[in-house]
Every structure is written in C-alpha cells, then in structure tokens.
Image (cartoon, rainbow, N blue to C red; front, side, top):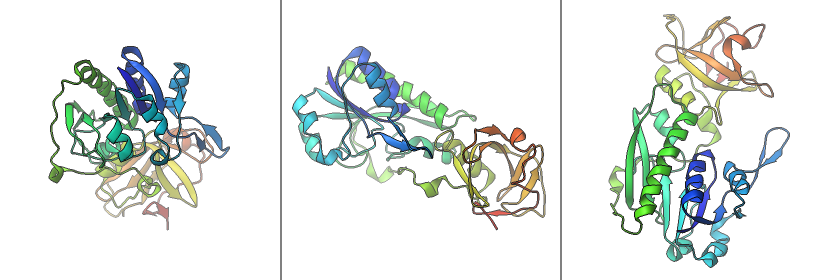
Length: 308
C-alpha cells in the first residue's frame, strides 16, 4: 500500500520500520526539530532520524491544521499515525482514511500520554488499539486490540517499547487484510483521558502514598524524569522503591536517611530513591550520589516537592 506515516517519538520507530519493509512509505510527517538542553541544541525527532536513515522524505509542518495540502496531493491509500503529536484537521480526514496506533485499550486513556497514565495508575495490564481516526480525540472506530501485562519493574521506556512492538505486529495484520476489517464503535461513556503531560505533572509530591509516588516515577522514567524541587534546584528522579524503615514521628516529605540510602517519608510509608540527577550532571545511583553530598540532610522536610 502507498502510505503516509505520521509519528514523532521512539514509540513510533518499530511501526515505521514495519511499514518500510512491507509497504511503500511515500512521506514521513513528524514534529519540527526541538531546542534541547542548556546548550540549546536543535534536535530532530527519533522518527526524523530514522526516516532520513531510510532515505524517506520528511515533512515537518509547524501547524498541520494550516499546512496539509502536500499530503492530500500525494493521494496515499492510507495515512498511518503513531504518537504524532498534533490533531489531524477534518479537511485531511475527509480526503484520506487514517489509521492510528494507540498505546492503550480504548476507550481507556484517550489522549497523548496513555502509557504514562497506565503506570501512574498502577495498572497490571494495558494494551494497543488499532483504530480509524475521527475528528475527536481518539474516538474513532476500533479495528483491532490486544492486551499486554505490565511487569512490576516496567517504567515508561520498557513499557513503551513492548507496546510499540505489539502495535507494529497488530498494524501489520490489519494492513494485510485491509480494507476487509471490522469496525467496532467505542462507548464514549466508558472513556477515560490521559492528556499530554505538563511540567506540573512531573513534580513529585510526598503527600501521595508511597505506591502512587513510585508509580509516578516509573511513568516518567527515563523521559522526562520525575522532578524534585529542592533548595531552588531541579533534581530529576529516575528510580524508587518502597523502604521498610518505619518512623512513627515522620511527616510526609521528611528525609529519614541521607547517608548510604536516600529515604523519604511519603503519606503512608517511606520510599527509597535509587537513581537521580542534579542539574548539569550525569545520572547517578543514589548511593554514589550520597558520598560527600551536602544537599540532603536527615530531618529536612520536603513539602509538595519544595524544602520548607
């Protein structure tokens, strides 16, 4: 089939690879390059890098709703999207059928962060949905779904990789039988939402239960990382686990240990932070970080992420 593919993050890579091997990819549409880090390095998306390696034409409209005629002019058999990052305009959907690879069992977790929210909510199972696109967020008819178990040690990166490979396989099956596919309408009354994350969503609050706090860190690791605001510094946290230390006098946010282990009281118990990163520094295991550090001290209390 003649396909226009639209995607941006690493989640979309196995899907693009499958399309390249099994079909004719006419064009790859991805988000514009971003300025990243303190050095403000202009960085292409993972999909742009892969498309260029495959010698595929890349199109990066800043606003797709104003700049989509190029896609219509190509007249592909299908548009395939996977975590593209912009809504497809109705005029484009009216011209060309579009199929989306979504990282949840719709109608659960409509929106741009379904994998993160599945981890935030401590789900034991999630999955992938192949669906027709409609002009309302992730509301189109379902073609195919398959569930996938979430391992206790899964974080955003590992779960995203598992789901992307599952999505690639499901999409291959769908395209091999297209257009003879089923259409199952979603029940909008059962819909839940996982909106694209904002900076505030990344900040750790020790008023949460230990389980929810650990799940939040899992859902944000390794990108963008959970954020701990401490003494006017932004510290990234990439790993945590429950601690068996019990202090009946501890309040949420109290640092119970800052020597060989970094242990902080949550709402209902303590957690041990295992991996973190200071601004401008490399990611470190907590026991290495604690050697000689003078940032955390036992007895300090962190409230809503800030030292008070």
